[in-house]
Amino acid sequence: MAEQEKVVQIGVPDERERRRRRYELLAAFLLLLLVLGGTWTQLTLYGVDSWMFIALLNINSIFMLVILFLVARNVVKLIM
Image (cartoon, rainbow, N blue to C red; front, side, top):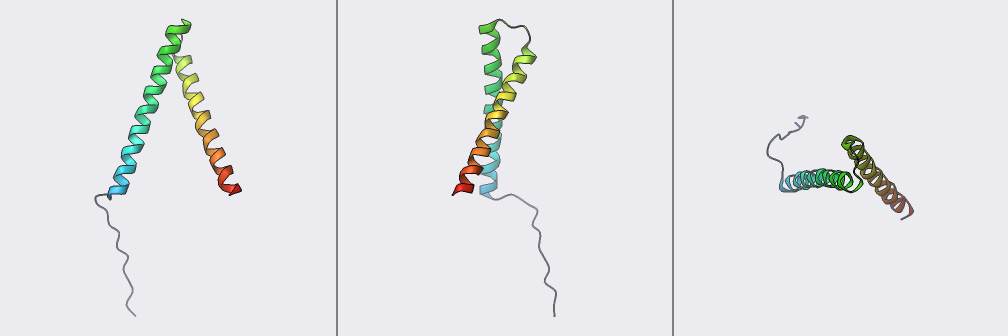
């Protein structure tokens, strides 16, 4: 019996993969703008001098919201 060879194609990703990458880059860019905008707003409104603290606080808040979304989504999937 002849052994079947597995063909691994390394080349241009299909359109679906390209579209997904584009959305990931757009989401990362929007997240960066959200953090920078929130940091700038809080610095101007509250007059705090520590921009690093405010930036880390914003990033931490966004990550907590993402984790909450993922947990809630998985709980809904589990119930369904």
